[in-house]
Length: 113
Length: 215
Image 1 (cartoon, rainbow over the protein chains, first blue to last red):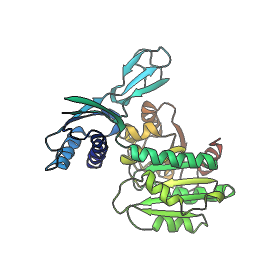
Image 2 (tube, chains in turn blue, yellow; image 1 turned 180 degrees about the horizontal axis):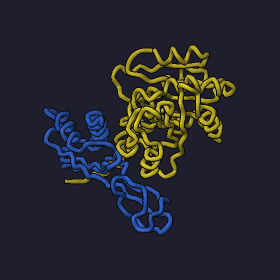
Image 3 (cartoon, each protein chain N blue to C red; image 1 turned 135 degrees about the vertical axis):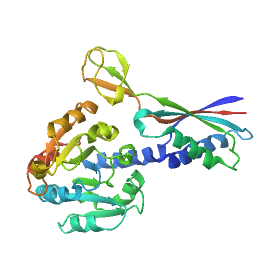
Image 4 (tube, rainbow over the protein chains, first blue to last red; image 1 turned 30 degrees about the vertical axis):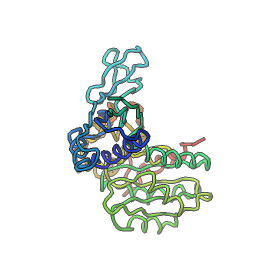
């Protein structure tokens, strides 16, 4: 959903970061995409490739890390991955959970030379 | 070769404007509700029936549609201040569109604000508008498994309105199944059943709205 717009925003933010490091060439961008974020990684990848084509950022890579939906059970204190977003602790079946990961749309770092 | 930390959100632009909106609403002590659903669930009709029950709260409405002012015209007929956002293709409202629309409302004299989002159960879930609460509306003519199909939306909602209950005798929709599916992805989700056509449940909905104090 909106992968092209997101690729555009990624490149916007990356360009601003590169402005602070003149003379450096972009090698790759590392992004974290949560499973609940409704983003299709392949579409984000191809949107990125299309947008950098024949620009100074051509040949840079988009490294997408998919972050599973993770929860912490406030009842038994265990941490686990939520399967199919079913909000129940697989250990004690409590629904008293805190979701700690899975909604990320985050640029963590870039690699330059 | 060097690694440079970025640590920024892809949608940070929208998040920043949403925070500005949210701070403005808190300053004004203005509860704002984002109405979300697929097209045709009855959002506008529900508002038409709900608003007369809340006129003492001086409500205002922001309408979002791809095209036409038709929904805003319907709200305008009730004497409620309304702004129509026409996205011309945008499938969701974003914080900047809402911020601009707010400038057309006399917010000092509005004490309750509804934002009727574009009919879409996918994209609006990802675009914070700065609202206080999200209300997702599902109608009985849709599948009762909608909540697990559109899990991101239902997981982020505060209230689920099940509309068109007057059609229950004619459809396969199982209310308890729909609620169970929704509770799987959002255990604290609240539910209200309504028929915008007959008026059933509208008093309950108005009561819920009134109970949502922003303070």
